[in-house]
Image 1: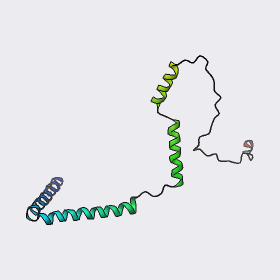
Image 2 (image 1 turned 90 degrees about the horizontal axis):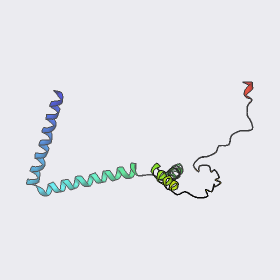
Image 3 (image 1 turned 135 degrees about the horizontal axis):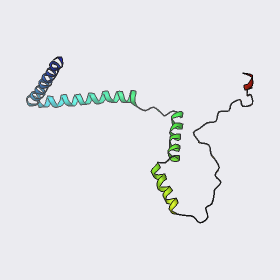
Image 4 (image 1 turned 135 degrees about the vertical axis):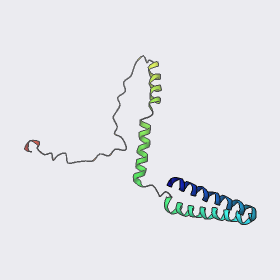
Length: 128
């Protein structure tokens, strides 16, 4: 029942607002247009202040640049399965008479960093 009272009150307030806007539009159209334009202007000013003070993107940090570079490298390395499947189908359809095995050198991923540890100072596990 409480919910029903709130919805009736809500519709009454909306109805009175619509009646007020329509009556002002017919009685004082110039003042109505000026009030709408003033409201839009102040809304844009407030939005601009909030946007430029709080929401504007700051200069990307060095770590973010490295992360984006790693994402691009990863996307280039791991293309979608559909592209690989069509590429593999093309390769199997073309049979080469002399398959040449290429000696591929293994490269480390560019976005991974090796941390040097103390490999020479290994503890004797038998003494534990």
